[in-house]
Length: 515
Image (tube, rainbow, N blue to C red; front, top):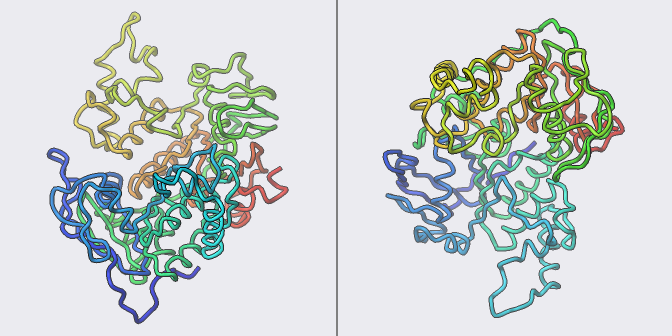
């Protein structure tokens, strides 16, 4: 794939310049004298660990935060601090990782919303429709202006978000984790769009934790570490290993995946279906077997039944048809308590909404699933000493940056929060592990740590279901790989048996194998 960027031999003028930007939150220095510029027709990637200061820097750029020191210039003019409208007027647009679209409105209504003057009570739909169609044709962003957003795929919704920025005449586009929920085919299409955008003179800041994408799409890479600019590299003159080392301050080594003797079937689903729940797809006749000493990777685009499958295994969702067997026996009443008692441990998809309770302490959170066990309860009363000792042990063993077990968990970074959830799930040693998006949003160092812990559990005989929208993660860890599409499961294949393109076709539901 060709790298979008400015043409060789040219030296475009800077369209964006940050000079000595510093931001403090109490004693924490989130950004420390950061300076960089962005040229016309250039793609600059912004890398950094969780808590490195990327989000704070973008919030200052957009006027959501006011810097304590430093200045921001766009197209040679200073941007007034704390004024998001000024940033938009200057031609800066942003596509967030979590889309900000109204599902019950049309594509056209979402794009044009807020662009008409207050004295014009009605939208000129004809003009808006024509402009959207022209932008779609110019940049390869095919989407029907009259379609309701609720009917669109994830890739189509992202196109709408990009069109929203272009409709407002954005000349600088910031993309925050833009491929997090895309199939390989949709990712390739996005990169093609970026190439068209920069060819038309747009400049792009590309925020991602996927190093292979940064290498594929950017001209330059800026690495933040602990609030400071740790390094700047021309993409053509660096490597993934060098960028990873800049991010964490030392060499990052991915854990090896060694062959392990597979054991007995620890969990089996036979023709299981579920009732519709939420916005995701329900399960439709799913059969699957998890073996001890094996990682089963489940790939798929978000909303195709992963949440239903995870809920089923965790006991929060019951089957409407079919059978579940755990350790060779079919439980009478399947519930979260029954799942825990059967040796099922879970790493939930959303560490904030489901995995933790924000205002509870670390100690309270790490015993939350087993507070009634004899380990933490004596004569019906909680043993807070045991709870604090357990939390302190996890903080030590999992290298969690946390002052004490009494710390409110909401004060921790995402990576440290995920380490605690991982420790809670793996102690005591479970026989079945549900790892649902275990590294989502984590930096390369934290990802390697989580992977190492999962592989250690596999080596001691646990059966692991790894649900991930990151195909690279699936391919790196899984012994067998299945794809879920519209609530149906493909026949599992051994690692390396199917190409990335074939897996992408299954994820998009374009192959009969998914049925």
